[in-house]
Amino acid sequence: MEGKQVLVTGGAGFIGSNVANHLSADNDVIALDDCSFGTPANLDDDVTFVEGSVLDDDLPVDVDILIHFAALSSRGMLEENPREGAQVNVDGFVNTVEQVRAEGCDTIVYASSSSVYDNDPPGREDDPVTAGTGYEASMLSRERYAEYYNDMCDDLAIAGTRFFSVYQGYGGAEEHKGEYANTVSQWADKMARGEQPVLWGDGEQTRDYVHVSDVVSAVEAIADARLAGVYNVGTGHNVSFNETVALLNETLGTDIDPVYEPVPLSNYNYRQRADPSKLMDATDWEPRIEFENGIRDVCAPYV
Picture 1 (cartoon, rainbow, N blue to C red):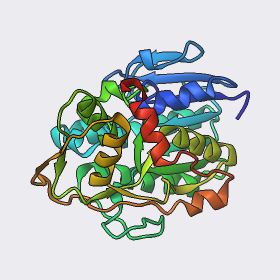
Picture 2: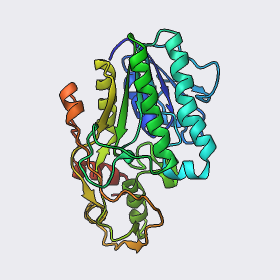
Picture 3: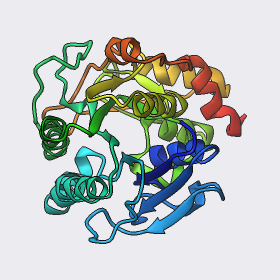
Picture 4: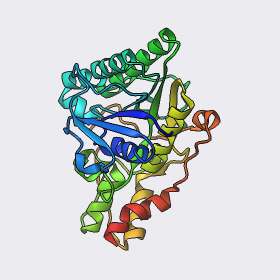
């Protein structure tokens, strides 16, 4: 991507800031964020920061490409604030798409979620999906609206990204997320300070951990190809929580046992693994950061 006008909503957040910073090398990038879960400190000087909400009526929408990541981006956030979650995740999505479309934007990439998959991996885009939580319902609503826009607008390409477990580490742009940061990052920080990580259940649940740099390249590839539909962004490999803690111990040079607590949630996703072949077939993208190398990056500030 080069020479484009790009709007990244949620652009001061974890994934959004990484995308905005990367694209700003060759494009004019605006990062819009209300600073509820992001901070402009995450952004490079080349990115234009605008403080605002995706519910506003006067968004900076004279752009070629919209990268829409603004959301209450976890189950807990929506359970604590269900009305706000629906407004931001669904109304904010429609509001932003309508405004950029009216100004001639023809390429949109938006965040959905892999949480819609059940516990029978690998998750494939044509699998049946469910809305077991308000968060999942809001992300699936985005996907349904995107189907509508793709069918209605011949000149618009709108693609959703079902992100799996995205991580970077507190040495990147995750620290401001606190309890909502990826478990790898939270556990690494705790263990580096000699604290025990808390694992739910028996620790044998799995996640498909995908490094944020691979997410950034996936988003750029989707925008460049002007894809439509939904696409998994994951590695195709999963790791248990117990294996993750063992790898963190090995990398940090620690010997810390986790604490196991009962799972406090219903509809909990125990097993997760992406099938990323649809995206790989549609573009030249492939995940490049192996989990062991990603763990080393996460732990580097502590060792």
